[in-house]
Image (cartoon, rainbow, N blue to C red):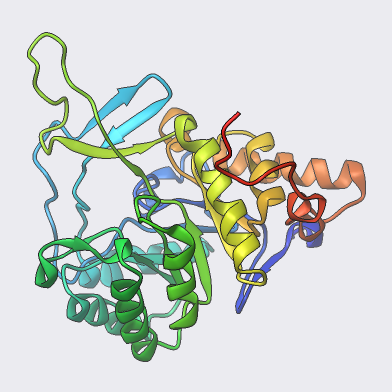
Length: 316
């Protein structure tokens, strides 16, 4: 039985609780059934799904950093057809709330994946990964231009009736403008943020530690940046449902993102260190709310209501 104090609503999407697992860090969910009861999570976001199976980058594709990790997996996945035939039916029997993360190299590929998912039984929502290079536009990232974001989101919106989540890139020149473009062209929910571009070099060989050269930085190192971005978007676009992502590993992190303005959070890198972390956070949040006689909905945006002592970005 779900705890009504934990229930959250993000536009048309209602979740039993605000704890969601982030795409790319939780496989297809099936890999974690020894550690987590999937039915107890608010939702899980699948590995990014493409139109056809994709092998990703050659190893090495992951390296640890002092406060997190770098990855350049390259969006390896089984493809949307195999997901629908092999993964989703099993997730459905386990009672999981499933959000399908999708990507493509062109707008047409995004639309094709979304159309393939349209009538799938057991999908709660679709999440667009817009941190992908558009091969038709000189490999410019869809999420790095509000114009490109708007074009992609509007085409996908026209192709699906599903709840549409757009996952924003922190590497965009102006994240608020990217968020506004996504909202104005059909996004129901925004998730933020994806990984920051980073690099690690072996001091002995002087070669990059990742075969791709650069990679996406995640983990505790990015949490203050992600909290600031969630706060800014929530303030600039009041009423837009947000999922916060970035370095969340304990209850205090969850509460911080909720206070900043997120209605739900996604757990990412912490899954590698503690495969049961998401289930534990659901239980800890339930105890927190019960002890205080409060509901998660009342925790959302507390920092927005209190205000800040200065503008984000000010130097001391």
